[in-house]
Length: 378
View 1: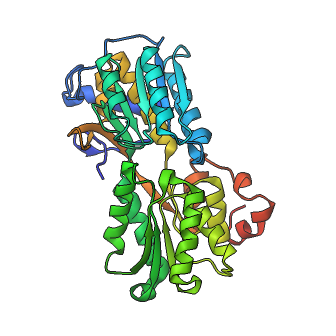
View 2 (view 1 turned 45 degrees about the horizontal axis):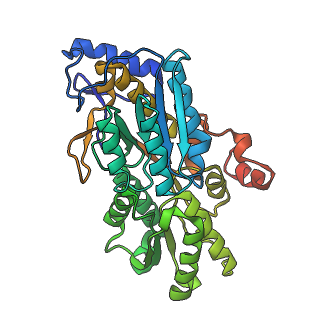
View 3 (view 1 turned 90 degrees about the vertical axis):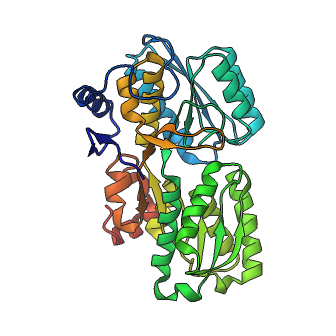
């Protein structure tokens, strides 16, 4: 995973406007001149603070989108535009047809830029093309959309899978070679799913026996639960040593299916997104780990990129897009990739609590108070 650099030196980024602005200003001493730096497509005409940023998110089942991504993004746009900028927001509710309509409505309203977390990366491509034809830049958020996008902000998604795979091997220890696991992958229409799977298999292949493997349409917990019940019937409840679950919503469904089948001890189950209920399951021992992806930093970066792009602030924009990624339809897309962390019982204080995502009181509700005390979380 690439790390942002300043004059060739690695630069740890904090998700604050001050840090981004400071690093951007320092770039003038590195020989970067305004308007030069290869930000991809030419910037939109310079505008002031009175701008409208379109934000399209894919679903409401993934708790982080409504609870964190949207409010963080909106707050940052408001801050960067001195209260004059607006966010035109829409959630697709897990419908790619609805997301296409929402996208086209934003193009019709002539928003200044669109930030989209595509429910279906390929299906959104014609809409991205329409936006570009109308002179509206498009930034892909969290998932790499196809079509002529201007930039991409997400995480190193292959690394997410690697972190999950390593966690399973760590949990199984010396029993890994003789263990049978189930893989509950994400939605095949989501390009991140392939990256997560690729990363996980890089760690797990030839080290464990993958007994059953499923894709999960629209990341649906209900679909994941149904598939887990199939896996239990096929493999046998007591023969499942671990479950690779690509995200937390599915992890909860997997654990429910195991309980319904009569499991008294839950095998190691992975997750992703650090949803509150998943963190609580980690505390209680029901879920082995989750991948914490700083949506604070991701949403902040996306808001900064959008505002800088519209306002023609090339120095700041280039400072945020020093990575490069390829999609099936475009090469060398300017990008920023936010680091990820394996969240376990041992580092809850240093991750979601330290970052202000949750408080101890949020996590340690009465049902989890004794489990929290056992790991020193109080």
